[in-house]
Length: 353
Ligand SMILES: NC(=O)c1ccc[n+]([C@@H]2O[C@H](COP(=O)([O-])OP(=O)(O)OC[C@H]3O[C@@H](n4cnc5c(N)ncnc54)[C@H](O)[C@@H]3O)[C@@H](O)[C@H]2O)c1
Image (cartoon, rainbow, N blue to C red):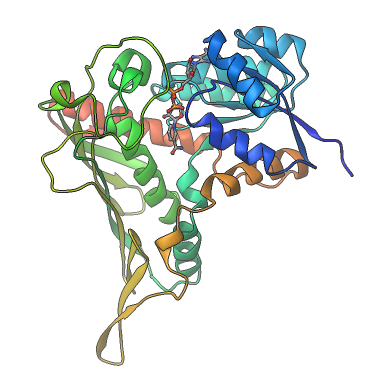
């Protein structure tokens, strides 16, 4: 049996519990040696809860004192770049939560640091590990959809800002575009064969958020303190790719819509696919329109997604498995997000290089 992977976590908030569960699900392969959060009370309680031997309030100190093989960076967004660099330079392979960073320049720094240190940097594109993504990809890879030329990605919440730092641009880098849009935009790009974006046209609005920043949210930050609320509460964009594919995207924390909506659709020359909320293919056969529904539905698409993502990260580090969510794709997503924000600010299409 190979030696156990020594793992650590930087940022012990809500999502870190999913990373911890992923490590704990592999007791023969991984041992979580240390955890870190700038909130001392929180990290102490967290270490005790999960039986982690050592805790820190400074990631630099943790990396200097421990010899960690794998680190999860699950801080707020503005700390993704600095903490990933600290962990990589401290000798660890890293899985960093989405969005990769505040912007493409930070993302590029993270990618270059990983390359310089010869370490893996996986990005938390967890939707790539959903059952729905895996099923639809099987159909795409078999050629059943033909060429995918159009896609719609929707992630709309009526009242869903997670509060705290999520609403403060200095910590988050933006609102629903960078927080929610990133998930569905990456899913579409991944299923579409990872084409390169060439241009974006985007709009953002901030009409409702200030009055709705609290209450009724589906995901709530566990951080303490008070923060500004200055992010957009809805974003919409159209992105063109170098293979001719176009994607429209809509994401909101706040919108006067009846109910929260998550919907991803792909349209190909041989078939269309509804990926979310449930998988269905639309095509024609023998002169008839046919709707195909796999017997294993997407109803359970989200179940086990984080466990599969974390197991994959451990496989990549321990066995050299090629990474399904590499840092280079994180950089591309940050370029798309930067271009959408820039387009919203300047009022016209922005070229992506
Ligand atoms: N993949 C997903 O579906 C998903 C879901 C939720 C959140 N996220 C992402 O996970 C990240 C964290 O979100 P959350 O909801 O857990 O936030 P949270 O507010 O619950 O927790 C963030 C934690 O990071 C800590 N922190 C900040 N800077 C730090 C530093 N330099 N060193 C150590 N600790 C530090 C804070 O004290 C806090 O405990 C965000 O980037 C978010 O976008 C991803």
